[in-house]
Figure (cartoon, rainbow, N blue to C red):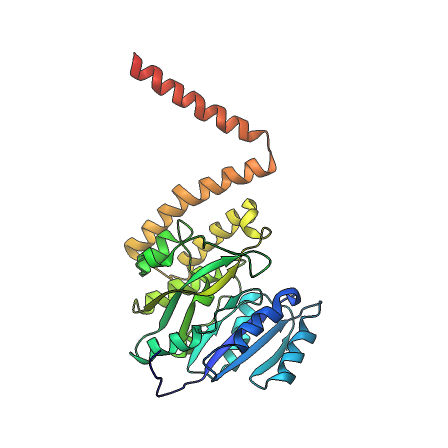
Length: 296
């Protein structure tokens, strides 16, 4: 590793709501960083498990850990509290059930130091099961993606997303940005769109420095919630004028002609299992009619 002349402070924001089962692993990955000039803001978002006790123990052990208590308000609300209290030049987000590899901060600062106009350094990532040592291939390979506003708007969830802890961000962006607390989901998508709308300049480290824990439960398995989230997100993008012009038209077309029909069908299949046979029969009839048409 090349020598870092300046050692700017990195603020690591860890929102936590009832994730005491994983919190120690997450905070241990921060403590073990080779880059030592950091503060870690643990935002306890009204947890009812042992998260607060675990956080307090870390804060007593190492003064770089800072406990922040708040009423439950959701992930975006917790991240915003962290941003309000952050003192660092750079920001690292880390959800309480994920971890980062020990060289992530150091390697990211090296890249950011090369260009002060750079807003983000993105690393590749790797998946893990409930037990963090059980690693698995990531659900997408970020090394094959050329990041741009257009790519993030039109291809998100269609082959790739960027886990937020893959990035280390320049704090300047957050002088005029806070996470939208009204979105029921997809706040990370909104964040990446706004970041790349401001600037498409980024650096990429093709190493799996972020580890993303993949759970079986959650919205990703609930097609009804996914449908409503995508529908509401489309309205949010339009009403807030996050994007405009041709890109907005393409985005709206993608949502209406691709995502919403697929999720509507998946939701119906999930809620009414017998309807799946109807769709399969309909597809089979169409195929047979096409074959008959060709033969005639």
